[in-house]
Amino acid sequence: MHPPSSSSSLSSSSSSACLLLLLLLISTASAALVRYDLDISYVQNVNADGHASRRVIGVNGKWPPPKLIANYNDTLVVNVHNSLDVPTALHSHGMFFNKTNYFDGAAGVTQCGIPPGSTFTYEIPLQQWGTYWYHAHVRGQYLDGFRGALIINPPPTAQLAKYDHEYTLILHDWYHDEFDTVMKDYGGIFNVRGVEPPPNSGIVLIMNGTDYVPKMTFIPNKTYRIRVINMAGFAMFTMGIGGHDMDVIEVDGVDTEPKTASNIEIGVAQRYSVLVKAKNTTDTNYKVAIKMDDSMFAVIPPTLSLDLTALIEYSPTAPTADTAPSSTDVLDDTTLAPLVKQASVAPDVSHDLNVFLGVLDDGINHGMFNNNTYVPPLTPTLLSALTTGQDATNPAIYGKQTNAIVLEHNKMVQLVVNNDDGGSHPFHLHGHRFQIVYRNETRYDPTQPIPDQPNPIRRDTVQIPAFGSAVIRFRSDNPGVWLFHCHIQWHMEVGLVATLIEAPLEMQKTISPPPFIGSQCAALGKPTSGNAAGKQGLDLAGAPDGPHNLSGKFEAKGIVALVGTIVSAVLGMGVVVWFAKE
Ligand SMILES: [Cu+2]
Image (cartoon, rainbow, N blue to C red; front, top):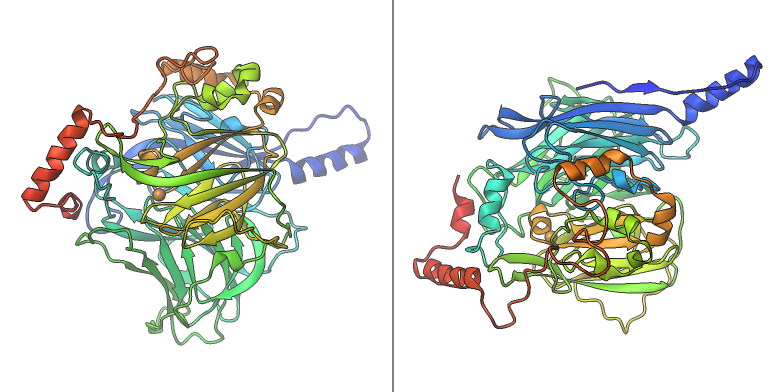
């Protein structure tokens, strides 16, 4: 782990010592560079859950990866060196990247991957504070271990809830096989039902500052902030604390009015901060009760325990109470109110995104928005937007498989997301916090107007229930190319992704990627300009086209899949057998 190094630069020709001092103070207070060097490499023989050793993707030769910490208004400089044998990229989840869209880290969207042996320097002006995380945004590399906490401290002047000390809880699921291995089964032609692989374990990591620690130590009468980050690839969690209530004060970097809760539900990629008041005695220790949601698991692998805990220790000699949270009630996050109030505004434009997972004409189960599955373009979408002039406002140039939506600048944008799938999905929008103005367990009925709301919750990831819906709104005031996608990595990998191209003509004026982005694309043989195929106008020859809907015809792979399914049914074997095996 490399400790951060802070530096600031200053130049002044003034001879006034006072002015110099003043400038120095302003400079150090408001514009520190906080630098981290992350060498991304395989780490062999990591036994993360006590059940199996495996190769993981670690940082600086270690796993789990370090926590990154910086202050509001700093510039976070992350030098990512790729020591893997495949391309990688680092996404800082929840950051706005205003005017620096090219540091969003979404491979195929804002950059090509970082080629093996190369370094990519992300320079992120921190225009927000709160609880975030970073993770690989290339295939399922984050499930293989490339994921860590990112904490941004507020300015000292911010009027926020007070606490004495803080801990960070990282929740995630764990697979004994590498992502690419599991993906062969999940994304294969014999899994026509799209049965997701359940994890082999759940893992809770506790951090005190930058250290991973075995427990949270509480001192009587102190107030603790516990930051909770769900870094899972698939699993949602519910969390409560034995013998203690929690006051929720933050979701996804948005400070909220404190709200007492017995339990919170943390979808994949979501974050919460809760304040916990320590008891006034040290005679009993307590457990944080963390339950992995199994409603989407077809089978429970033998090593998987759904009930996880984190210890709150008042005294090393005290017994640990097995008390459950005070009730089974789970907080509805839409009842939270941001500290910085923002009323809902009628949308200027609305887009429907209908979610479905099903088999396409390649015989494979895909995720789709509006019956179209995402396949990355040849040219990263950001580079297309920056190099195609007026054509950048035409969604067609971004290719048939990107689910491209072009947004005008400074409009109130509404996305109506209907989940026509039987699973619950966490949808994440890059580059924004959105208001959740509606959510229900049924489809959204467009004839029912959404009432004005004085201060709906804002966050960057919304959990949408099975066969349910959500309506979200945000202002298109952050020109850039931003993905909107399910954060369950299995679903993302099979295409449950859309691309928002926000104010492309404005982007052309304000966004200038550093040259190494182009040279890294070139090193990977990817085009760096033009449409999705790297060509001009609407000549998209060579860009992904399909897979398409079955529409009554079967291609060769589809027939194999059909036959395979019948054979598998006849033999009385479900595809779940694959996932049940050790
Ligand atoms: Cu999903």
